[in-house]
Length: 231
Image (cartoon, rainbow, N blue to C red):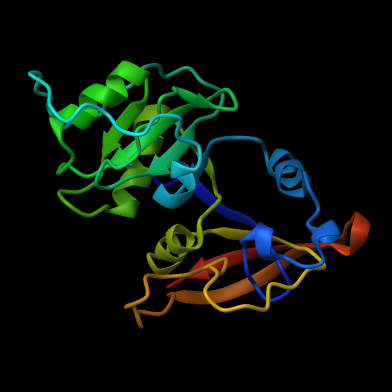
């Protein structure tokens, strides 16, 4: 069973998500993202590898291990109120920590990840699941998260490539956008929904989008929520 997936992001009026490039800087609305996250239920959340790397406290795990591990889910614990889930198909993130903001980390891996990386994750107390041989099957990952951890509602919170992958897979049920009174205006920055540079298609299989609510927030920001129906 798939969790209800809400893609929640802050963006500039030109759809960009690198806050450091937004102008005017005073309008970046510090704390707005977290505040809306809490209003949306403050539950389990998912990020991509690039965003996940920003939270890493180690540079690398040891390159070798004498241990071997079955390619099956492993959990340091199953009783958390919320989990911080990170896509990391090739096992590139050395966490050096077991949680983010008190939410235990769960890595979503491919079966191609090395035993040494799995040993590093276990040493850090980082749970992990497998969702594909070499590339990630996002629908499978959601099914496992629901089945193994009971996650019924998940906040998808970037980056743009990960958001775009979920969108094109038809896995997003709702979009929550906080539009800040800022402009990026330069080339090269990611959008809310993005892709790799060499990808032209496919487009998102979205059949309809229905506005659920709109709210003007302090400082001129606008919060929009859309229900998404996929083909």
